[in-house]
Image (cartoon, rainbow over all chains, first blue to last red; front, side, top):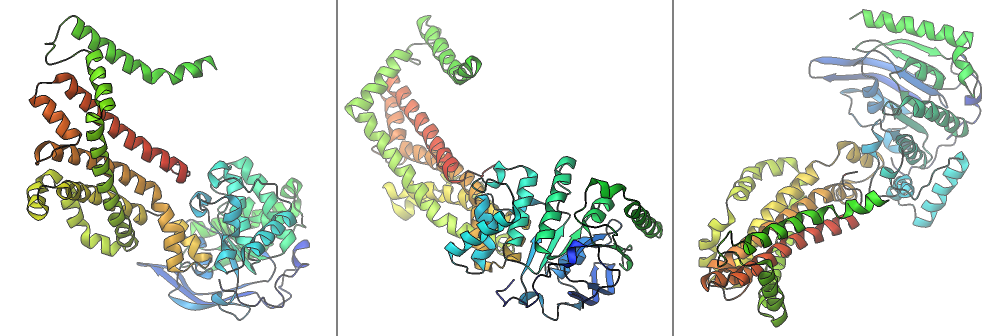
Length: 277
Length: 253
């Protein structure tokens, strides 16, 4: 993550408020071409192509071990691909700002720092002066209307609050893209529901292109503009399905006929892919 | 509230019980009074020794030697442990040597250090430092090596350089384990110092005091010196625990 000059079209504000059109209107934000990756003998990706539209929230869903996390980890530069090219509007990863949220918030935050300093840490890495770090962090928290005591240490917070701190830490650099690897799977159900709301609100506020890995189809669909369904490895795109529901989505969305129908379709694709073992 | 207050006094039960049995044993003369003086005689000797300065002087000498050896050990072992721990390959290549000498009783090194440093303080302090150093080194290196992978990855993803990761993450991650090493190290240093004070041409120190009192059959003084050594060991451990709780507040959480 370098301090590259921000792109002209850093965040597109309008895209996220309505259900996406079935065809991306603009040119894609992320282009993945010829991606290949193997672990020992298992070919996880073989010549894999993917376009991710700008300003949308994409959920990645698929059978166990199909390489959901590996995909975002390769895009985010945590795992080197064996071959292939990943570009962000024509630029390489080291030319853009991005945020990454780990599943295990307990191990991803720094327990020796207060929540505030945890959130501001990426700014320190970008050599932002302390006064500006403070004002930018405060502005972000105020803008998103998040109620958290930022003077607490992570271990003094609940799991959901800690993950919220992780998400704020990823957002503070004003990333053009966000990666979340099963961000809520270590939380209890009550907290998961609350965090879905929070993430949706953050996404509506910022409109940042977001790629989320989920192992829960309902969660994947509730949050996403499109669900990327992967096959068993070597992974293919089994479906890249738009979710037909306006934002903000609520509990009622879950029982909306269009939503339910799409979910049934996704489930069918998923089960077809699982059975192909 | 009442129950909580009572909880705080639980540790006192063991102390009172021990004193009661001890008093009973000496009062009933179950044990030869020459071998086991009464608690009163022992604590009188303890307070007298501390008052007139004979025991106090020995106590201070032992504190000085233990502190000096632990300090030397820490100054060498902590930076070295960080360097070794930050490269797992480097540590693996030295692991056997470290483990071997860590397992070697430091007391077996006395003759060698006597030849090197003579019979003065240097020998005692350097043998204790040698023992404590390996314990601290081992713990610091493991603390650094066991730094949570996710945390290192998180720092890297946020743009931290290798050096930054070392100072901002690995160093702090290793602190709880470093304190484990320091507490074990200071305990070991005290053991070695007290033994050294007994046997290798020593004129002072708690070890010397215990040994001398035994030779003179001054049993209250011997027990007093043993208690002083016990209090010192307990106090040093407590001191490091308090420092740890203050500065490594996230430890175990």
